[in-house]
Image (cartoon, rainbow, N blue to C red):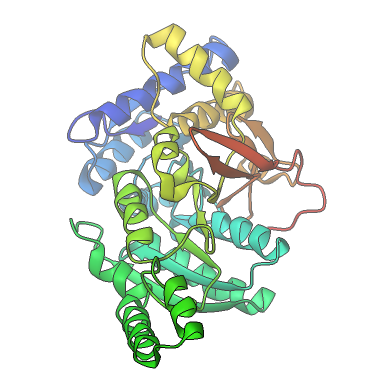
Length: 371
């Protein structure tokens, strides 16, 4: 069974996931494999009803649902029925022994990004994140990485993701008022001295906005899309200089439109490798006439796994999903832990003007890597 929001506000995403799943069927499944879509309507109640229908139809495996709240809503029913789930959620907390999550974990992305930055010599970090579960997970992982690597997290700031004005939080993060006051006082002191050395020093201060270094040399902005663009534009305005402070991002930065934002140039972010995804996008466009949304690869890979591991008699052994070697998917290598959440091989990218380049490739296998 495939549980997706085929009606309601997320129906376009649900339909794209269904398209991707059907594409995987074309590539991997035999004629005995049957995929039964069930509409969750994008709600917890709808997911519970869809799971009940799937169980009643005799499904041996459930793919989906998409949202963590929907996974939680079906948990008791699928456990009672002895059915495994490969969901599309990125919430580690909803994973368990027989409920697997395909989504890209924020924690794994932070670990990869901070670990790379540490390797490149950065030691003092700040975090700007939305005040929601995603931001909380990123912040929690930052704290864990600080303990693991011995880095210093000097500033952590949260903002309302529904806000239209991020100025106050960026201004406060930049300690702008204090640094601006320092500059004004220094200029005043030099002007009062009125000697040649003071005049030279005063000349050097002419083009500065503030005076005094920031306590961090790396800033992670854990967001994407229009919010990231709005925040990025404010950073130089409040004198967080991208040339002095390395900007870091998560997979949410994986959007070619962001290369047009000057403040993000030189920033690093992590995301899955692109080679296999490009092949998937090409096949999807050929089949359906339009480009798929970013996360549609999850439905393709989940359906491919189901086609391979569900046996001809309908039985399914969830232990086969936790092989340490993992699998090669449309987003590179991935595997499931025994706790149900996914591990992925991630590349590190750097944003250039109008371009993005790989600066460290994703691993090609899990050999030697830990969960």
